[in-house]
Image (tube, rainbow, N blue to C red; front, side, top):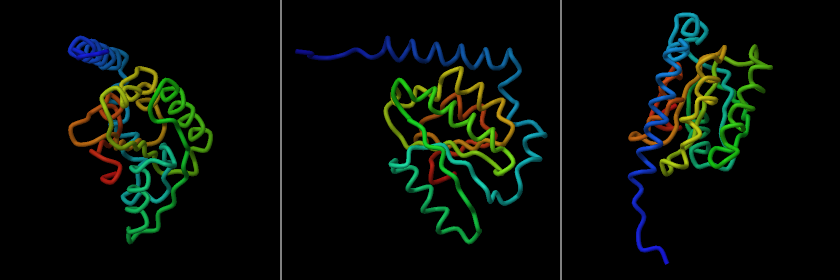
Length: 168
């Protein structure tokens, strides 16, 4: 029987790793790449062709698509389905980014969306591999991961960070 778990040590370790990743991205001059003028000039005033990285069954994806359908603009989306939590999520998101890169000319921007969850559920968005791929991506990346209290390393390096999939 488990009577209680002290998560402070686990959360402290996760935060330490997260800070180390941010510092590494800054030292490697990757942290601000998505905020550069080169990327900003690639994003049109009205983004109309969006590559979406999400899970097809996620509530956040459904909310995002409802916003697109309700928009007065003609916006096309292509879903690049990825596992958004668990052990395979990091590689799954990176694989989706690589698939989009192969079709870069078809899109104005990439939206990475995932609704809220526990800190552990969102951990793949705090990995060096995922964040460095986002930072170096040739198209603007918009992130809507979690809720207003959640800010991942991917959010920090994205061209545009919005608090939720619906906000994206």
